[in-house]
Figure 1: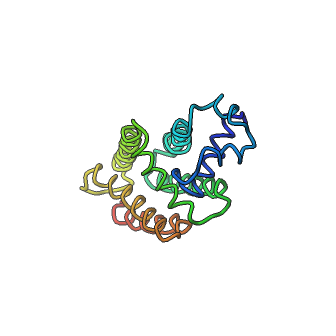
Figure 2: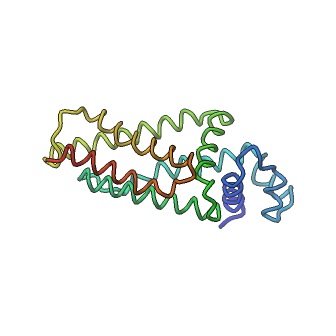
Amino acid sequence: MTTRDQIIATAFQLFLQKGYKEVSLMEIVRALKLTKGAFYHHFTGKEELFREVVHTYMIETGEGMYEALDQSSLQGFMYGYLERMHQAYLTMQQHSEGDTQTTINYFYLAFDALRVLEGFDQANQTLRASEHSLWETVIQHAKDAGEIKTDIPNAHLARLFVGVNDGVGMQLALQSRFQEAHAEIQVLWEDLYNLIKH
């Protein structure tokens, strides 16, 4: 791992533990046992570092989350998505040293990014549109293959699947119970799937 990557990973860990605003640049430098000069060799300041953290752990992670999923079956896609989501949660837990408050801090970081980082809103909207589009494509494949039968428009079904994920995830994160999200989302998605399967 390069020094730059170590700075990004350490900053992410500290931001997850305390939040963006609460972590000082000096705290990051001390945690890395670097000089300020070594830090400034890689980043111009805390905001640029935050931009890289958000890009690495939110945008790139989101973009790569769906690439290898089985898209030939809605059921396979659902379970693959759940597994990727669970792996992302485990990675976040590793960065936070098991702190259950971490998941809500992840959402706080996203809100901080919306306020602080120019362009994050557009990047996030693009990522979300891509996610919805992929769900719609998978749903259409499932209809074409006879896996599901429904008159519900693909876009509406996609919103239901994504909305369950987002809503349950946020609700449980606010209750410091995000570790339960995988199981709860799976039950709800399976119920939704059973309503439309052929």
